[in-house]
Image (spheres, helix red, strand yellow):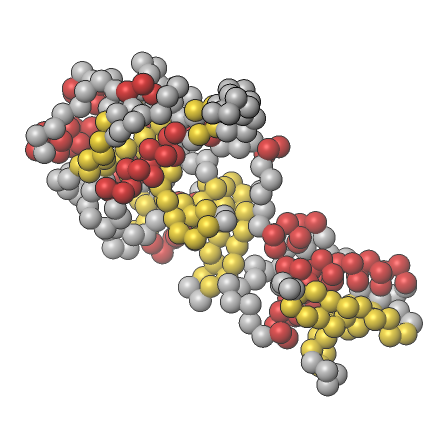
Length: 342
């Protein structure tokens, strides 16, 4: 399918504060009419999950935020301690991997947090049906939210829920401009729509939705597979854990407290290495400064245990961006001196 050669993207203003029980479809249609605009077949409406959640009354007390995040988390991908508490990236109950399971304290009533809808695709389908009933137009709906990217700074909006819009443009097997078959190219259309809409929605301007015109070829009569179909299955997910969490899981040290965002002094970093290494099996590991700087002093009951401990230490060093040189110091003892990883 050919790409659209032009798009019109318009922020929908004047929606006002959305409250529990509000008819979100009606609010959006009224706001469009106030802008002297209306929906036509093939339009796409991108709507912030925040107003969807507000209309559904998905709030909780701010004091219960940590418990709410835990309840909204399927599994932890990575976690770090900060001065404000534990920061975590988790697979959310809503589906995507997100910071704090998408539980949000911004732009909400004082003393509360906002939860993501449990089934954003169902919310998109419901909103689409409401818009069709009010306007007669067959449109696509994208419920959007914001997330960071593992390899890049900053955040961007993505599709949390979708109805009536093709979510993926799978070009695998087709020929590129040079006549070569494409083997991996599959454009995430729904995510591209969400990110485009965010350019006019913003985060602080009170513009919770955007109208996108020019994608009629990608709007279908049925609701489609939804945004959940974009989630990678576990077998295809190469990045199910953060690098610290992956090492700790591999050596059996998942119960050790999450490391801090700021690494701290060399001695503090080595102390965490010792905790992780000894949590994963037998042996003793102490941080000592013998005049040449802090080092790890290992001891065990036999040579086998010492060797296993040394391997756990080498792995744990990597989680602190350190590498070490091990020297046997006699009997079942060894010393590991470290340097930053280059």
